[in-house]
Image 1 (cartoon, rainbow, N blue to C red):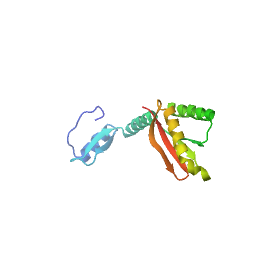
Image 2: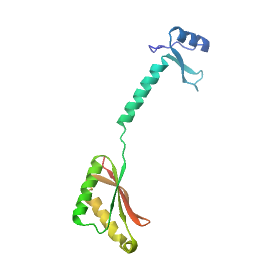
Image 3: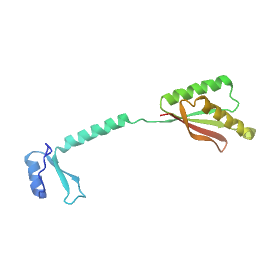
Image 4: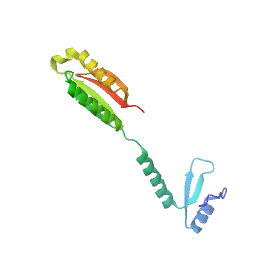
Length: 150
């Protein structure tokens, strides 16, 4: 019933007749139960309220995106500070940050300097971030992923 009262076990035809008399719908709630559980309700209104709940749930979901910053291992101090500031902005907004250092040609010999640079970035922003993925060589670049602290 619309008021939530229980009619008990009824034959399908009788339940349908009761719903029809009240200008409501007979909706199967749990088809796998023995006997199947049905409700008498206004199905259009039920769908509308369900969509409203789903919409509210989607609003409350936090969408995190992955922002990427690419630097060279020969980065200057001012550029380093600018990138640190940028990382802080991304993290405060709730985004993850992917730091990558591209190594070209002979620069691959200095991959240890790139790893040291990424560790320096991590140390500089450690109060705001958690290291989700340590600095790791992937092909011709070294990647580190930082996530906001909760």
